[in-house]
Amino acid sequence: MKKRSLVFISFLSGLLMTLSWINVMSLGFLMLIAFIPLLFVEDYIANNNSERRFSSSAAFTYSFPAFFIFTFTNTWWISNASAVGYVVPVAEAAFMSVIFQLYSFSKRIADNKQGAYFFIVFYWVAFEFLQFKWDINFPWLNLGNSFAAYPQLIQWYSVTGMEGGTLWILLSNILIYFLIITTHRNKAALYGINLTKEFSLSSKEFSKKSSFFGKYKYWIFAVLILAAPITWSLILWVDYEDEYSQTADVLVVQPNLDPYNEQYVLSPQEVIARVENLAAPQLDEKTDFLVLPESCIQEYAWEDRLMYVPSIEELKLFTSKAANCQVIAGISTQKLLPQGQKTQAARPIANHEGLYYESCNTALMFNKYSSQKDIQSRHKSVLVVGVEKLPFKKYLPFIEKLALNMGGTVGSLGTDKTAVNFFSADKKIKVGVPICWESIDGNYCREFVNSGADFLQVITNVGWWGDTPGYKQYFAISRLRAIENRRYVCICANTGFSGLVNAKGQVVDKGRYWQQEVFKYAVPQLNRQTFFTTHGDIIMRPLCFFAILLLAYSIVRNKTKIKGKIK
Image 1 (cartoon, rainbow, N blue to C red):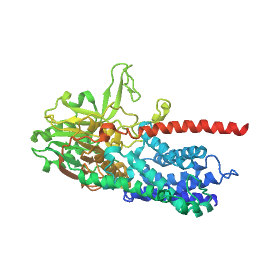
Image 2: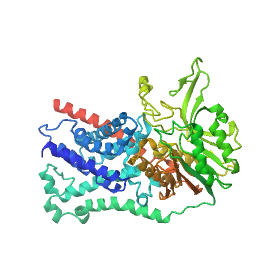
Image 3: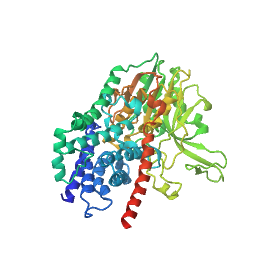
Image 4: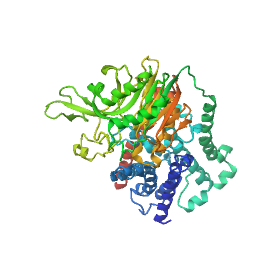
């Protein structure tokens, strides 16, 4: 087989991955077979390298086309804001190819070749775990997100979280690949896939000596890996019912402000006037929350002087007729740090030596009675790389100058240490308010619910992505947060899709793109906690630990083999 044929086979994997995602994950089930061409490519390289036809980094080289197709087709819209956005798909594809190279490296030196196929599970789960933890956090393309359009099939995310979907995808690809190459063992041999005794019996042994399980074990495993999670999910789907005694009356406003030509050009008074004109017909005495999107309040305010922000004063006056109404809204704020304290996000105050402040992307909650001390606030803590957080700034301080300007605050922002919930005035309703990118991080969102949130109210501004798959995928991924925590998720977008998702991940209501709209929902207050809410990604952590051990073992084993050959 010519090397260029391997590239075409890699393209096939990339195409399957792309088809699974491109129409808002509507063909997400294709991910269950999307890695099979890549597994074949790696096998071919491993079995046909006796004369060193391929370099030691061949797995990286031949997997990169697949991953680049996948990452580019699903993140190109970031470049609508800046040409730097083209770096994202290249970097993500490179990271994925490195993981595939590590898998190939460990598999090559393993004694049990059949078991070595499962090494990719450890490495890939560790990679996705890292996507939540390090400075270049970009969990958007984590494999488990692929089933966002199929809540009926993934109700068990309430136990495993989204990463359980990643595990399902990887195991399905491996076991279906086993089935294919053992069923077509003769054709596999023609392509240089040499099946060992561990993998299959000879034709004679297969027909005479093998038990039923020995003959059909790969059929059994393939069927089980596909059927068991789906069956489990359908049982949970039928069995689950909301248990609540109260609802929260939520009024969501989508002002539809163009982030390039309008939102930061209109005066703050004009923005608030638009919001009030939309909300006025539906604001009444029963309204518990009036929700405005991320960065809707345009004044750049000091946090110890929020009472004097004109937009806040106007909104307090506007909601005065609704006795219990709390306003939830996004704003950019400045937080003064104690004398001499300097954080990574700290900025010096001119002419005041030793004084620093942090700029923050902030969510506020207040009502007509709120004094300065009564205004509740929380700071966005899962930040967008390149916009709100500069990676490795501690080691590369010059990188601050490369921040992308999406409007509003630019550069590294201040954050909270924990997820903070908001309380209604009567303390009967507790709501978690993830800000934009935070809703992509399931482990962070569960902290709101673990601290008692009755529902999640996302505020976001996805308008800068334009009319692309970006805002559609963002809304779809919010459905996973609902399943993981068994909470209703209400989304308030500047433009894009505002709407409501129930605790089973079903879309109750969804708005329209590029429309001024207002929605009124009676959101159930739920209080049961799922296994995932309580324990987070505890199931995945052992896999990450074994990935580290596997890599260390592989390095040592490889060096031992090299020394043995030299002797």
